[in-house]
Length: 114
Length: 114
Image 1 (cartoon, rainbow over the protein chains, first blue to last red):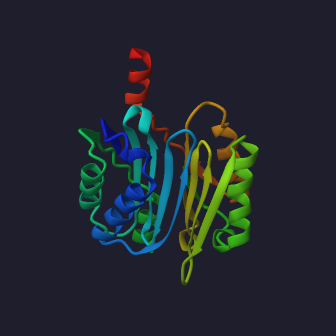
Image 2 (image 1 turned 135 degrees about the horizontal axis):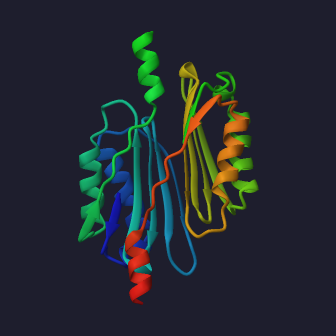
């Protein structure tokens, strides 16, 4: 996800960002296993939430009102749209875009053969 | 990165995987800030290395000999090819593929205007 024209102060607020990412994971139905956040000087935050179904990541560039988020999941229990919508709303992103990538095609092929 | 036909035992070996991801980050010239790994039952590992330039992530499915890796960087100091080559070698991947995604176009545009 590309999150643009976000609330710049919020992109530099560790507790708000942590809350946004954890809420997105939780409300999307993911099982949260851990989290790690790092604040850069003078600005910018990197944060990850590790979920049983893979991970959510966010990197913010407050000076540009921009954040990049990855929502990486396996299985079909995590509601991706819900996680995405929560991030857009909580970060105050006036524009956003989503690119979806399918991973692990070799797993699918092996499952069929097996 | 899609890493296929890997050494299955290695994909379930926490210390080897941790070493592979940290070595890839380090030898590619990244500044390592932290790491977090999680082993699943009965198999599979998720691991992240947070770097000043963003992150490296790996998720493994030993039962399929498959691992998905993300190398997310900003700036041009991290040698992506080197990180990728180390992961392929250390995981014993007989096949692999790489998809490169450009992020943060809005930053580039704002930099030009500014």
